[in-house]
Amino acid sequence: MGIIIPMNEYGIVVLAAGASKRLGFPKQLLEVNNESFLRSTLSMASRVTQPVVCVLGYNYNRFEKETKGLDVEVVFNLNWNKGVATSIKEGFNYIHKHYPYLKGVLFLNCDQPYVDSELIRKIMNAHGEANSIVSSINNQIIYMPILIGKNHFKDIFKLKDDENLFTLTSAFGSHGVQFDNAAVNINTEQDWLNFFNQIRQNRAS
Image (cartoon, rainbow, N blue to C red; front, top):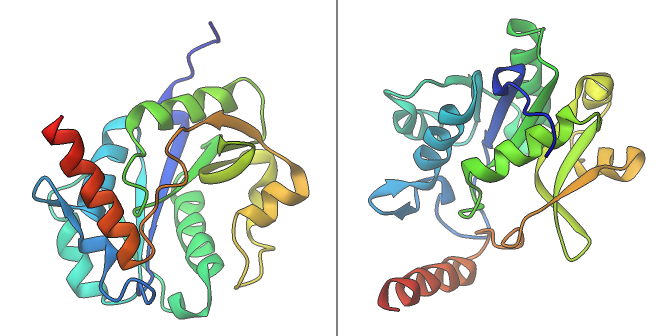
């Protein structure tokens, strides 16, 4: 068994600034068990470690209400519509400025409903075993969440607006942590229907 790393050496940035154009309505507000995806993700993340920073953009005022009462810090990305890297850099800039001691920052979307605290802890512990970048992986494909270690903080700022964290995993490689349901994310209405039906089947069984 590897060394267990203190979780407070790591921060989390939740990326939730997008307009969900392919889905047609805000994925941040989709509900499971009477709780929105955004609030559920933030609540889970804040129970694992601190700090947790949520990056909002589109419809900021509406989504900010989902953060009330949670131990999270919210930043607004004015340039959210120029590409996901603008949100990555906005969130990282904030967390690095206010918490410069962090050894790594984990970036997390709110549209992967099977991401849980166990997976996040596994990723952080894997980084603690000396890997600079740690990603989720399934069938040899890299997925979010992705943790960027201190050695590559400077590379985050080099991302072009239309790039993402997979640019860094392609350039520098990453250690993969197995995540069986990594491919389940909600980008389209069909994705949502498939996920909803799966939940209903699981409850019936």
